[in-house]
Structures are given as C-alpha cells and as structure tokens.
Amino acid sequence: MSKPSFLYRLSVNVATRAAPLVARFDKKVARGLDGRRGLAARLAAWAATRRDTKRPLVWMHAPSVGEGLQAKPVLETLRAEHPDWQLAFTFFSPSAERLAKNLPVDIADYLPLDRPSEVSAVLDALQPTALVFSKLDVWPELTLAAARRGVRLGLISATVAPNSSRLRWPTRAWSAPAYRALERVGTISEEDGERLEILGARPDAIAVTGDTRYDSVAERAARLDRTREPLARLATTAPDTFTIVAGSTWPSDEAVLLPAFADLLHQLPTARLLLAPHEPNPDHLAGIAERLRHLKLPRPVRLSQLEHAKPGPVIVVDRVGILADLYSLGDTAYVGGGFHRAGLHSVLEPAVFGVPIIFGPHWRMSRDAALLLDQGGAVAMPPPGDARHPLHSQWLVWHHDPEARKRAGNAAKQMVADGRGASERTAALVWGLVDS
Image (cartoon, rainbow, N blue to C red; front, side, top):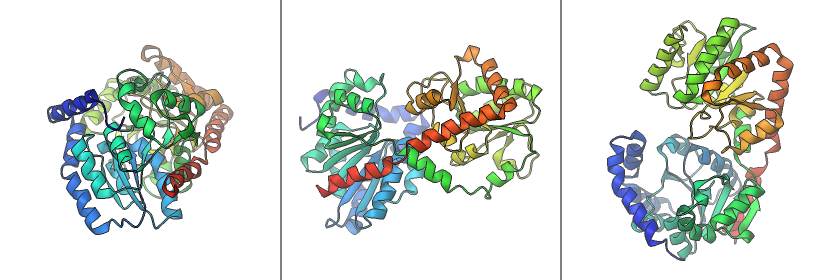
C-alpha cells in the first residue's frame, strides 16, 4: 500500500479539526498548535539557506522527551563520526522543546500534522536521505510519502508493550503498511521484535540493538558536577540525614507518598523528602502544600527559595530539568506515575546512581521496572488503599539496614551497566541506511 487508508486519513482530519476546541481546555494541545504555526515556512527558510543536497541528511523523529533521550546518544554519535552529514530532529509533544534545543542537530522543530499537504511541504524542504523514528510512533502518511520518494526508513530503540493498544484493531490495520515500509528496525529485545512483526514489520528488517537510554543516563551521570548549585547546597546535610528523592510525581502518587513520609518522620526526625512533581505548576504546588498542612507537617520549602529560607523536612522542586541529577543525592528514590494509568516514569535515572527504587503498582508497561524488580534493585507497592504502610516500612528497612540498601542499589546500578552499548549498535544501523 503506497498511501494510508481512507479511514486513517478521515480520522486524522477529524482530530485536526477538533484540536482547536480541545486546546481551549488543554494547555499542552494549545502549545502544540501554536508551535506548528508557520512550521513549513520555517523549514523552507532553513532549507533555502542551509540545506546542502550534496550532503546526506538524516531526519530523526521522537514523539516526546523519553524518546528524544533515546535519540540523543545516536545523534551525538552520528555528529562525531560523520560531521559532514546534516541532521534534523522533530518532536510531537511540546514537552520536548527544551531537549530539542540542546541536541547536536542542524535544525529542530515540531513534526507536521500527518496530512498529505503538511507532510509534502516538509519533505520538499528537508529532502532527507533517511528518516528514522525513535521507539514506536511511525506515522503512516509521512512514512509512506517518504518511501515513495526513495527516502530510507528506520526505527530505533523499538519497543511494544504486550498489552499495547497498537496491537489491536483499528490501529494495527492503519499502521501496518508504514511498519512494513521500514527497512531497518533496531529493537530493545527479541520479544519486542516479535510484537513488531505483528504490527507489520518485516522479519528480515529486525535486529536487536538494545535501548539507547542506558547509554544516555550513564553518560549524563558521568558528567555530573556535584559542586554546582543546587546540588552543593542540598548535599550539605547532617551525617544521619535519610534522603528520599521522589521524582515525577502526580497527585495520585502524593496521596500515598506524603502520608507515608509523615509516618516516617514521626519515627525518624532526620528524614528528608526532595519532592519533584511531574508538573510543578502553581495548582500542583498548592495542592502539595495543602496536603502537608492536612498531615500537620511543616510547610514545604520550595527549591527556588532555599537560599533565603531554612530547610524543612520537605523540599519541593519547583523547576524542571534537574531531577536526573537530584537522584544522586538520594538514599532511596521514589519514581512517580505508578499510581495512575498514564504509566511509570524513568527508573533508569536513579538506578544509574546506585539508588534503590520504589514505585507504584502500575509498572508493567515498563521493561526497566520489570528488570529492576527481577534483579532486586526495586520494590513495587500494592494498590493505593494498601500502600501507605508498606511504603513507610520499606523506608525503615532501608534506613535500619544500610547493607540491604546498598545491595539493592548495586543491583540497580549493575542493570544499567549491563544495558550499555546500544548507542553504537543503533548508530551503525543508521549508517547502514545512509550508506546503502
């Protein structure tokens, strides 16, 4: 099939027409629409002055931050090994804007909406040699239009959860031609390769290359400067301080986490919680303060005010971009997202520092979480109504038994070390696309 199905195109058109209405109630959708205004013109302007068609151009696409972090070490390797190539990066979610600005690429911008006119305009501007998707989002209109033009197509760090909705109708039927068009597919595991075959990928195109995020988090950890602020200030504590770093939390996490911490604080006055909500907007921060007030705990100190305020048992991180480094300060970590259906956030960021991890019951979509549990580097909590006391108890266990805490942390760190090397294998996959 050289073009997407009629039903797919109809669905995209309906969703596109509905987006402005949805944007009135969803700030993230509104940001995405604003970011795409003038996209074709921006890319055409860049191409008119900067695109050198004598040089290969690799276009890497990642939907959001997580997939962008998988693409990052590959782009860095391509830039180092082939400085003559041109690199383009696109993203779908506004949350990836900041990451995109710091990637070693020639041009970075939003992905066009998956409609014929928008796709054609961007392909006309970039004239890519290869188009490579990160993780799973292979857009049918864009993919098939690129294939018709002879653009080489790839997918990296590919993974499909066993219960993914993509494996069911109608998504599976709509996306199958696009997956079939892929020439090289680098999967995280053999099981992912089997599920990608179900989606439509050709068996001869699939190879296990691993997850590039393991290299990405390890390299970031190696570059960590503990002398810079706010790390230096937060690291200055009493010798017996027991620090819990809770990252990317949602209100559903905090409903369990904060009462459990209140219990811990009664028994362990030297306990400290560094709480980094996933969305540190004013409403979320106010909700945290109100919940702490209800628990009769001191008012939280915001990280931005720490220089002028006396530290309390709860410090709320009211900025983004530093959570991965903050995990290095933890005696233990709590990773958010496991108490609601949206899914667990990255467990690799604390694992790379040898910090034992706790998360909620909805972890089964995360391969990393399953590996950590299997190797003893993490503990999963039961459902919300039963989790307060187990969470409090686990913290006490790891406080009173430093050797047990160290064993769990070492298991987590070893898991990351075992997963390294995917970036080089994945970069080789992309080289093969261009060289062929």
